[in-house]
Structure formats: structure tokens, C-alpha cells
Length: 425
Image (tube, rainbow, N blue to C red; front, side, top):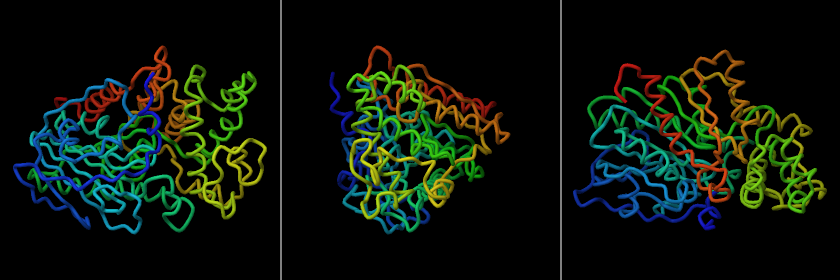
């Protein structure tokens, strides 16, 4: 079983992508409102089939997000704009810019009048969705825009002044790019987009939900896939520590440990994924997110001690108990929490065997939040049997896991029909 790509999939550190070369037809001079720097190029193919050859994407950024053997659409000519908005953090090294708040905007020649805006999953950069979202929507004629969320890599907690600032910046950067991309499309095509959708996987799905709750004026609707959900109950800070405590015992054959992980909300049948998540995602995400929201927990240490054993005590994230943390910590989590008060149509797809944002604690919980907010009529929640957190995890359990990319593209068509019932999709 080949899992090399999975090893770098979860929270990819920034890699250096050289500045994109202009296509032979020459660059297109397209300005982006508010951007500090941009470079534009006319390309014969805006999809990854073309951009990985011309340096207009970063394959490392989307490694491990798709199932082996996945094919995506190609042959979409148009204009690509790369650049960045003013920012003080420097974790994104793409193009040797060493500058965060980088973005990409793609403008296909054959435009359907729409725009899709996305943020990356995990701590990745602006090209993370190029295979699973950009290629798919470009082939349907959409313009596409993506942001790096304003900070990348495993030290996002160093950005901002207050706990939660780095994550709140994610939302600002999506809003900033959406406004700019709508204006860019309007100038480029001679008319503004008739419909704008927010789309995203994992942390990118969390961004979708936030935008539909806080900036519905910008969007026609949204589509999220295994979305991360922060709530006042703690989200990942409540679900990850029980798994971290129990997994080493489970790995040694302790059946009570299996029961403890299932009781924390992880779906039965996801067990073949647990070892990979324990080593690659559960611990790292717990430490990074906890440091961002609760930096005092481990004192002067930053992001704790990797994989410390249960019972280590103070400062060990395996022993973390969100419920008992001081009020200031809960207030920090509340700053970034969702409410369910969406004000535009949203379709959520959730893998039934997701072992990072398990349905019981994330997808199901948000669906209830939407209903409690009186917005049930705006939310369609689809559970996908056999779906893992990312399609790249399918090789871990080929007998039970299946890719969700097809469900995402179907959901996009469903969203089109829902929000544009009289238009051709």
C-alpha cells in the first residue's frame, strides 16, 4: 500500500514555489483592488494539467487530498493572477515572496457568470484546492479565487496579539479576497458576477460557514466538505485529547480504549485510520490550535510537547481538559465560534467515517445549530457513507473508504439548481 503522499498530507509546511512564468501569449495586465503586489499571465490551461508545467500551482500544497488515480478536468484557457495583500507575517514562501495573504485568481475565457471563492484546509496555502475545487469549477466556467488565509504552517499562533487573532484573520482574508475578486471579474468580463459561492474542505469549510453567517451580502450560497466547526463547547479542543489519551492503549489491544475513542464521537469503522491520525494529525492539530487559543496552558513552551504520554501533567496536550480551563480560554474560543445563523443556502457533505472532524461532534452538531438558529430551510446536510476526512486517506482502508470528490461536484450542481432554479447548470 503506497502512502507516501499521505505522510505530507495533513498540515503541509510551506514549500518554495518559484515565481510563475508568463504564458507564451504574454501576461494580462489585471489589477486587484487592495493588493500590494500582483503578477498576471495568460495561460493555455488554468487547470493543474497546465499550471503544474508552467509554475502556476504547487503540487506539494494539494498532495494527499485526492484519492490515488483521481483524474480532473483540463483544457481551460484564461488569465491567472497571483499576488498578496498587505500583511506583516511571512510564513508563506511561495514565489520566494516570504509574505502571507497570498492569493490566486483564475479567469477562464469561457465564463459562466459565476465566481467560486475558497480557503485551504489545515495550515496549507492558496493552491491546496487546485485539484479538488479549482479544476472542477473552472471546467464549469466559473472564475475562481483562493487565499492562504493570512498565515500558514505549524506556527500560526505567532500571528496576532490576542488568542484567536490568527484564526479570525482567516475570515478577514476570505472576505477581502471575495470583494476584490468580484471587482476583478467585473473589470475583466465587463460585468459583475451574477452568483458567488464559497466552497471549502475542513478548515476551508469552516470559512464557508462563517462567511454565510457574517457576510451573506457577498454570496449566493456555500458548499462545505467535512467542515471544521468551532463552538463554545471547544470543537477540536474537546474531541482530540480523549483520542490522544486512549489511542496508545488501543494500539496495545486495550478494548476499553476503543470504547473511549468511540465515546468521544469518533465513528465505529474508522479504526483503521486511527494510527495515521494519531501520528500525523490529532496531536499536531491539538497543540497548534490549543497554543492559538490557550497559550498559557504550557507556560513559556510553545505548542507543547509532541505525543506526550497521558498522565504527564501540566502542559501536556494529551491531558488537556477544555471544560476546566479558565473563562478567558472559553472567551477566546467563543470569538471564533460558529452560531448556525447562516443567511444564504448551504450544502454540507460529511464523511461517515471521518476520523478528524467526526460527524457526531462536527457535521451533526452544526446541522443542529442551524436548526436551533431557525435557519433549517437554508441547510442541506448530506452524510456520505465511507467518506474519510480527505480522499487521500482511502488507501488506509480500501474495503470501507471511498472518495468524496464526486459527492462534492454533485453537491455543487445541486447548489446551482437550488440557488439558480431557472438557469442552466
